[in-house]
Length: 187
Image (cartoon, rainbow, N blue to C red; front, side, top):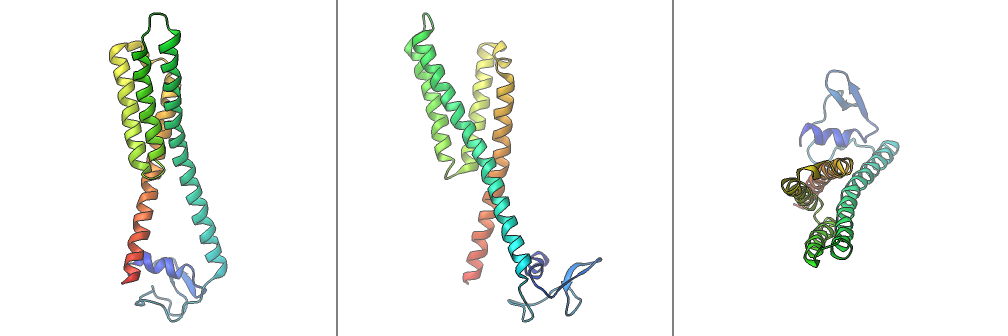
């Protein structure tokens, strides 16, 4: 076990103590923990355990809320392109339905990524961010002034996606670590 693993166990024990030089130590031996498997002197601190559970639940809710903001951004972009497709197809003078079909295809990609983000959050958000930036750059190449149109919304959406990606990646790392711990416990 690593020092970090010992600290996780000892921080929930009523026999814990604190040494300013080494951190959490065993209150019985006044030394850092060094047990193998289970500690024979372990007594669960119910208050610390409840606090840890509440903190873990809060952290999980914050991460899910952040990931949901990124997911919502993907759906908003998709809905926006659906509306633009209808506008370009039926209301712009001299427009052709092909312009709407292009926008509807783009909308479909973003909506599909939003749905996929329920299973593979970070991958979907990364692809969505890359595709969104690619669209912005493509429109800039066609009409340079388009970079300024809706610049505040573009920045907000990009920031939401970047923040959601970082939360999704952290959540996936935690899940991988928990699943890895479960495999070791089963051996």
